Amino acid sequence: MNTTDILVDKPKTEIGMEKSSGIRKPERSRCQQLIHILSSILIALALSFLIVLAKAYFDGEFRSVESLQRHIGKYGVFGPAFLTVFQAFQVVLPVLPGFLGCAAGSVMFGPLVGFWCNYIGISIGSVAAFFLARRFGMPLLEDLFPSGRYSKWSGWASRSKSYTAFLFMAMLLPLFPDDYLCYLTGVSKMTARKFIWIVILGKPWCILAYSLGFSLFK
Image 1 (cartoon, rainbow, N blue to C red):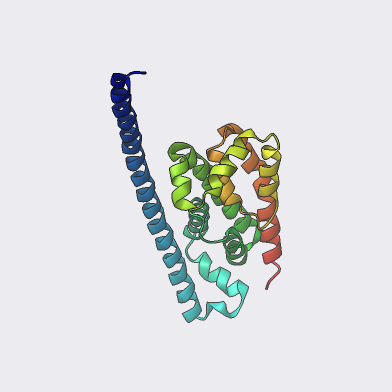
Image 2 (image 1 turned 90 degrees about the vertical axis):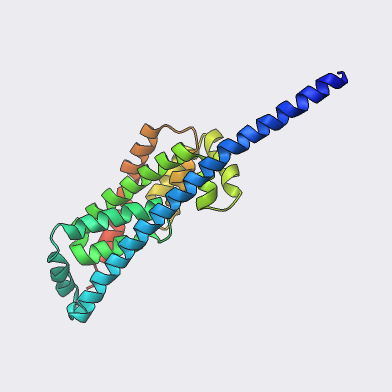
């Protein structure tokens, strides 16, 4: 290789790095904007929920589960709809553990309505997290979960033949961080159709157990 080749090749490499960096920065900026928007929505929902509970408390509706349910019932369909939307967002932005929403739904609406609100909301949020990860890739995971472990785990999820069974068991079992796995699966090679079926078939049992369990507290 002569001197001319070296002088020509070096700028090409630098240009390639600049282009790669130029593409990555707008992508990271979009991810951060998305996280800020989702955080604002989740905070607004949480504050609204706390205001409703505070009003119920000062109105003396915490005397019993039945009085609280009657108070929440005054809001009509907005109560179950609110819980469904809240559960979807808490999966997309996994700050709060999902079983808290399951407990609230079971206490405020009863085990049946609470189950369906939680199941629909968590399922929608799980699918949304999957597609967000598929759209934005590892930059989104790095912003949401600042740890290099996700780079390693995403490779394992793509290569492992047992990941499908592992994901299904994670959906099935309680207290498992399956919200994170929704994002992880989004950057794996698993098809969207397979993931959606895993959510549909695996999610209801744990939520049903929560709903029935928390309904026993009277």
